[in-house]
Length: 94
Image (cartoon, rainbow, N blue to C red; front, top):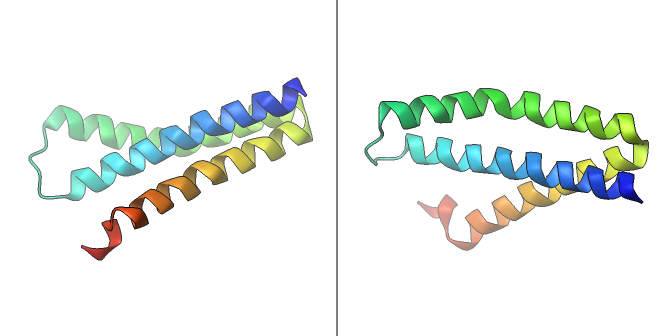
């Protein structure tokens, strides 16, 4: 049971980080004024997103296969919520 909760927690953390970086990349491409430091941090976060997701996924896998399954579900839930939110506010209509 602890393995499943740990996998889900790691999935939520990595999914939330990935969704946040995706949000920052979209904001970076927009018409707003961007600072050099903010741009550098966003690019660094984007480059670290996939290694973080794969690393935490591997950590879940070392606990148990059920932890990896919970990790994958949690990442999927976060990304689904991100797309739902974008659709709800009309993000894709602009």
